[in-house]
Image (tube, rainbow, N blue to C red; front, side, top):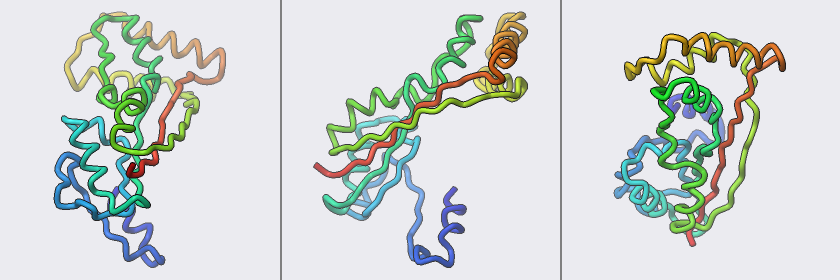
Length: 183
């Protein structure tokens, strides 16, 4: 992604930008260094969210600087997981995002920043059953989770029935963007 960003600004007025990759929990060397910090769908990867948010705050140069932070809602793609869990109690409902969802961010971010929140909620319309099933199994196969013998046929029927009825399988995607400034 970093290389893509560099390529996108190459030859433009923005080509003097500096791009760096850093761990959100190890940003001490960047104190008061940036006008803009972008941390999109990343905080939930941090072991200590408070350290991550404090570091992001500390990186901002002044009160005109911003940190752009995104995550997903607890409702983000929830039906995909609920169907799996309803069919088989072994189906995982734990998602890495659950440690820093919109609902968690709404409580944590105001401790560190003055925030403006913008929410994008849209419907993902899945029309390809195989793509859907590949996604479903991406949460079980790498972990070696065994599901009941009828899981595949039952999940496929639910998705197929909805595609037949509506022309697509509906997944709600909800992702907030927080524009964060120093208090």
